Amino acid sequence: MATLTLGAIGVVYGDIGTSPLYALREALRPVAQDGLVRSEVIGVISLLIWALIIIVTVKYVLILLRADNQGEGGILALYTLARLAIGRRSIPVLVLGILGAALFFGDAVITPAISVLSAVDGIGLVAPHFQSFVLPVTIGILIALFAIQSYGTGAIAFAFGPITVVWFLTMGITGALQLAAEPGVLAAFDPRFAISFLIEHRLLAFVVLGAIFRAVTGAEALYADLGHFGRRPIMLAWFALVFPALVLNYLGQGALVLRDPFALVNPFLNLVPPALLPALVALATAATVIAAQAVITGAFSMARAAIQLGLLPRLTIRHTSESQSGQIYLPAVNALLLIGVLSFVFGFGTSKALASAYGIAVTGAMLVDTVLAVVFASRGWRIPLFVSILVAVPFLVLETAFFESNLLKLFDGGHVPVLIASGLGLVMANWWRGTQLSLALSQKQKVDLESFASSMLTSSAQVVPGVAMFFTSNASSVPPALLHNLKHNRVMHVRNIIVTVETARVPHVGDEERAEYQEINERFARLRLRFGFMETPNVARALGQARREGLKFVVMETSFFLGRRKVVLGARAGVLRLLDRIYIALTRVAADPSDFYRLPRDRVVELGARMTV
Image 1 (tube, rainbow, N blue to C red):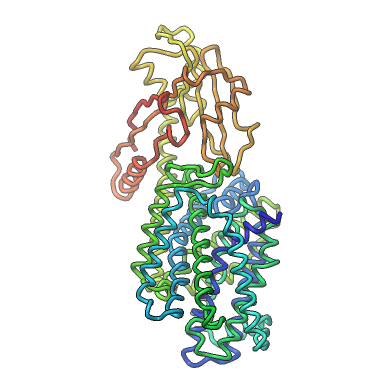
Image 2 (tube, rainbow, N blue to C red):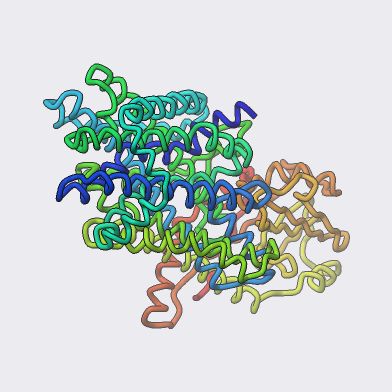
């Protein structure tokens, strides 16, 4: 438990742990334009603290951590739970799942940029003449961070927990020291100050909410990492260290600003004396690198789940650990993230400018979480719909206010992550649409496997020794690769295994449920292999498990037949033709199926076919 809790502190709370660097500063700046008034400062801090309580503590830690899919969390796990609870395909729920995943990816592009840039900005306080090096140093850190992803995170993960523990302890202690000199700021715990600020400063409060929201932006990552650490360690880390440290630091920053308004330039770094500033900047930089790493690995896990759920084409997935299945590396996702992150850094230049682009994607993802949670609670937990909606209202009201506040940034940089999320959402929706069309076309052209297997017992086709495995998505029909092999080569193997690889609506499938083998007749058999949506299909290993179900084969005497489908444009025009072009382009970037399924390369035979959409 102690090890898991330490890991949860290091990874789960990396993002939310860096918010004190900029959240209160950005929230107080609009208030300070007409001078800092004590009641206004306390009102802003009260809003911030209650946002942590309502959004992170109640919604995510106490409620959503219980909405786990066999221990896994995150937007796609919640989508799958809602889908299973409904018991049938639901297009609105599918749209919500795609929207939430796309918004998560949009957030994953901007978070490493703003986190690292905010920390390195502290160099300007340590040594003002080095200010011109902030951008090059940030770029160097980010390039190095993305470069090491291919080697896996295992080598550096052990340091995440201790460093982040020191970071939170430092935040708590520095905040408490300032708080001792200005204990009156403790009034921020009274929600009446937050409510009063909202009522008295309606337009200003609307702007302030956009900055305050940045204090809770790591909550989605908290839920997504449920499968890595479990609910109890994440809850223990939050209540025992993370939440107290965050609150103490925000209170300390507020106390400092009340005593010295000039500290608003950077209240976090001004918490310590100048002699300790270099050490604090170094620690902050390490913490933001950890936060960025957590987002990157979260994007890898999200992409793998999207692939398995049929929302993205197959991409190359490499495992970087022999013992931890969650440690994966996706070269394409890593490259796209790096390009996006560097584009943000070059395009905006400073953390202050990047702040204008931050928030819309995160608030959108949180709203999707809330809506899907209502669907699952009413259908999966059997809580009456009225009660589920009633419980969700405080979250919906607050998150909607945050979302609308962040929309003010739409034309000041906020459109960039929205465009990224929109593009990814279009890709995922169109891939799902194209896949469904392809399956429907295949269904129309199918040849029944049972009758085909019976007829082939008396066929004049040349029978050759060995085992042939034909991969197909439909276990009841003859694989196109088998028909093409008979048509062009006029041969049939002694044993023909029809293999289907299925993605279950659960994150992991146990070994006892991995393989299902069924004899059809002396020449033909079916083999169904099942994998969870958080697993990378390893067919070679699963075939070994299938031996326990009765499958007999020798790898070096077995041929694996794959159908290589070439999709070509049909006669449709307008928007549908454009969508078809996008789908065709996606099919061309999909990873080689033999690599994706981990088949022995020298035993794979690919037979092509054309399909018109």
